[in-house]
Length: 408
Image 1 (tube, rainbow, N blue to C red):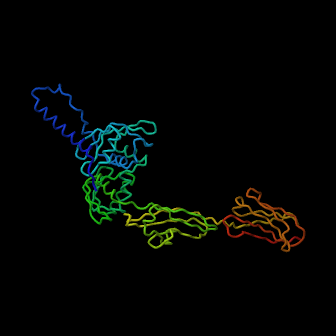
Image 2: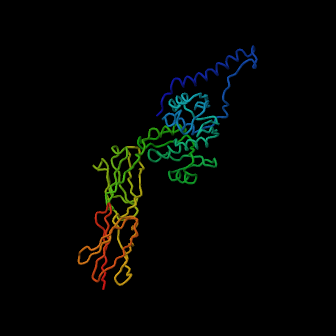
């Protein structure tokens, strides 16, 4: 899980400690000959001003994976920055390169766990101070950089669970014992899932894929647990209209060839199992009644450390492309009638008026989408059939409605 630290970083820390010890020894030997005011002591950061910081660990992880670079858009760090290592030695970082080396070479034995505030950053062409841990977390979240909360929520119960009981620190700084997973969720619900979790160490986690218990001594080691977890696949699908109320859904996520099976759901009901494990075609084809539907794909993927499961859903609004035509008939005079469209989509589609007598077409008129939706016609005595017809894209039939009138 851990990795050796770069020799340059180790040398920096060790030499700094040796220099401090050597300087002290020299002063003891020469103390009778040289007064204090004749010596320029090196200025060391005040160790009492360093604070434990999960945010600085998250920031260094972003530097390590290149999510945070020296020229990235969201914010720019100003140097120097004073950091504290897990062995209580401190270092002043003078450049992004130095910060990057520390980030890359961190391990369980020697890693940064503290920082001296304030930090100076440039964000949106404005220089601002980051005065505390809360403001650092807020900056990371604003720039989309994952925090402990983000990574914990991504892997907890998917890749690992705690070995209970555990203890956590509440918002009022009290220590709360949690004996079960349900206790944990109740606690987080009461505290708010948007706050950063604060654990009391040491604790143990149970890794599902490794089938073993892992000791965790601090936040850095908890991040190390995350690093050996694979993530749940980011499920997704595309939706294509196939005419009428028929739709084709096609699964198209990156890990599709690694996932043995996944399931299609419509409004919470499983309708099909798909995936390479069952020789599936990665598609769902369904014909719907008009209405609103929730379409989901769901998967449990132990092979990807996704034990609890993951899902992706979309809302589908189904409208029958075939209109239900209707019109009213109004007798104006004994031989003149007015016909008015009365269906819902009359201002959206084009349709035609047609008048038949003895099955012969005697009148035809197109009604455009921006028309007046009316037809006025003067008849001679006789029997007539008046029809409204529409051919709409995506509708496999010609919609039609007719009325008979008799003119005396």
